[in-house]
Length: 292
Image 1 (spheres, rainbow, N blue to C red):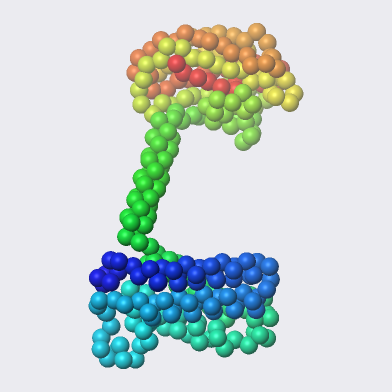
Image 2: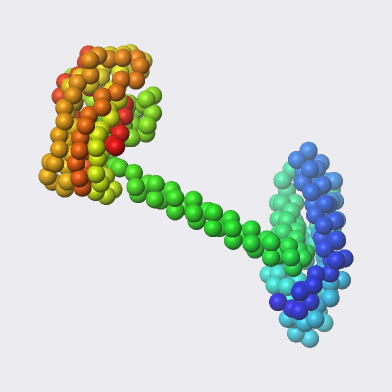
């Protein structure tokens, strides 16, 4: 980066700020459908920026002497600053100052959109270069902090997903009543078995752990109150081996949350299966299964 960039010219920064104001006016006029007026402010924003770049002095230029002879001041300065689309910018300025009103009367003209894109690109580029050294450092710090926060959130989500049990079941009534509902902690969602069948749902743990009890919330088919588990058996497995088991039964289907709390002490548990041995009304199901 040329040494002249270490201390940004205040006049340059002021000109860039003024050009951004022109561009904001162009945006507002565009939203209101005043394309001719919008175009006028776009060209004003572009010309203001190019004048600012032309007046900005640099201690060293990347352009050769031969190139400098053929380039305008703003072209040489932008080239030294690393701007990569000077040719398109020059063409946009030329076309933009010569577009007849009839062309601008056509909404979303291809020429209009092209000029807009170039002005917007230069506006963004110029705004970054107009920042003071302190503002640049603050901007980098904020960007680094944002990246760190995003990385932390991604890591937390990954850990949460990795640490959650997986679930599988012997069958489901429909996709609206999938087995995953026994893990969501909501009594409003339920896992239901097909009509007239018994079955099981199994929680597969991400890593072996100890458990002391299992809390089971019964289903009741929210709309119809016509199905739910009656007798259940819970079995804890360490690998392929059964290490503990407990049985219990719900007294009835209830519109209120009906919970069965079964003691089930076991170590190094890798999966827990809840079997529905019998059911009320049309079939079995559960709302939630919690391990403690």
